[in-house]
Length: 384
Image (cartoon, rainbow, N blue to C red; front, side):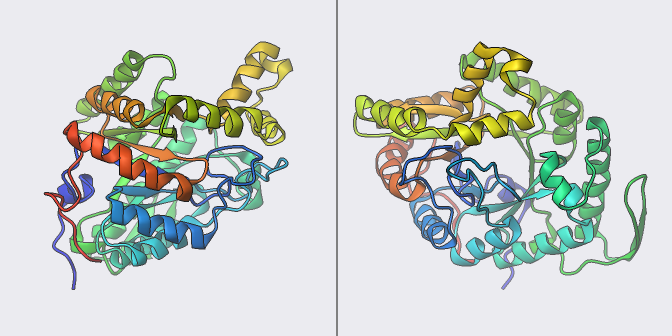
């Protein structure tokens, strides 16, 4: 039976948690950590299934995948095995009851007719718990696998606008229609079923450039920014900038970030494990290849900056490292909530090994701080 869903319920991920917490990039081997240690994340389907059920039971709000078609190689084959996100999302939605699960789509690689249908199908599988992360460009060598030429930066977002307009129209129009855009031309388009309840899925984007931010605030509900590794004040300023820009377009937008978590019973233990897993055993062969794709080499940026970037990328670029005991981690997350973030996507070196301790120790602290609801409390949960 279809659930009577509203856009507000989708935007709040169907619960009353003030600060949303999700798992990020679990669909990829090694997750977000370029490490050589044997216990690094497998990214296998069975491990993802166990993780999703564990997270759903514990009250984690969402799972968000990264779309990878090739990975970065190196001695660990960093992110080399990646589960395709529409399929992954549908499987997890069928196996959980509460959380929202996103798919990540590179718009230039998916015809909008296929994407709209895949989204609606996943949304029905999850009874309204599906979300879509839209990406308009990525690594050129991955696009080359598809025979697709990357457009210039601004043209990527022009194409993305036509793509997302077409998909939204397919989700709402009861009549057949044509699309005659600069980039996308479709004839006699029809798409059924519509998303659950006639309400479109939650949309997110992480555009970092000015044109990317403008695209996000015009079209999506959730905007992912890079949290500063230096200053919470800098992060707060970026949050305000995004929300002010949305206001200029007559919209409101939720703002999220991503982080890597290393949480142990003591701060010393957490720092020791971080040093072992992330620093001492980093897969620099993979990281150097990743940086080369972005033209970050000792010759292009200088030896000192290159070494700094190598360390940054050990835990996944644009991720904020949070290291400490449960009090440290809870305090850091509470601060991010206080400065205006709606939520965060987190990763671990090994999600299955580390999530139980996080849920047992950090989540109750966040409940006591008033930014998370107790499981079984006022959150609006339902079976799929």
